[in-house]
Length: 201
Length: 119
Image 1 (cartoon, rainbow over the protein chains, first blue to last red):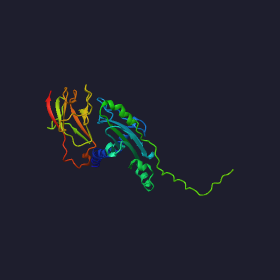
Image 2: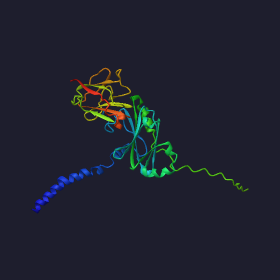
Image 3: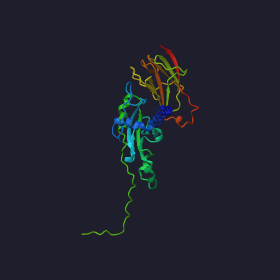
Image 4: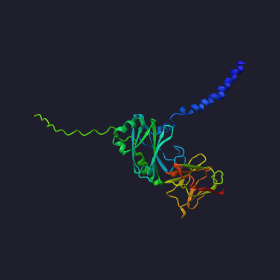
């Protein structure tokens, strides 16, 4: 009887519980899919051109062959990231994804309302304290805040025909995802003093 | 927003051995592209080096609608060559479309995929 019970328990464990645990554990075991998949393109905080899709060439499944794509990986624990680009494309968009490929933020050439892109990516915990004394960068740039630490920025631009591939690719790789900025408010001008300066001879 | 077709408008699986006419209008979008893939989701090699059409280059009828002829044989007008692919997947991508807000889905039309001759 005890032997049968052991067989039944082993069967339950192997046949039911372990597969359920394996399925439940899959998302955490899968790791940083998109982040790791994009590592081969190059180092962080730089835009890298994704090779164009063509017959027999599929860098990422179902990338639109009419679009050129550049990718920048950013670890926001190393500080906010300011993204600047100037694209002459008829249509462009920028998407920010988490490490698993979930879209967190997007903006396109029409919704941005301007031809250039100036976007500040910052962790929510760092943005909140800035509200009391906002630095000028918050007035200039579009600000997007995130609760995750690792983000992948995908900048894409429409390529109407193959003669424009080189020009648009150059514009994409000229985009900066580590542009300089200042989060500290500018220092106040020193108050003019009525005191006569002492000039030592 | 991406729409994928693996069957024609009559529900039959798309085949590279058949001709199709994609006819009508797309939902409202700033830009759209239509791309043909084979059954393995690969772009299809063809002498014309064309893997799809987009809204800025397509020839339209006077009413703004369009017809794209999907065929392995040379065709006049908007010809989307499919080489010798056996299976076919058509992907319509809409960029900057009000569909994503979910407000006007009911009024939108999709182009139909009408099967023609098969070889």
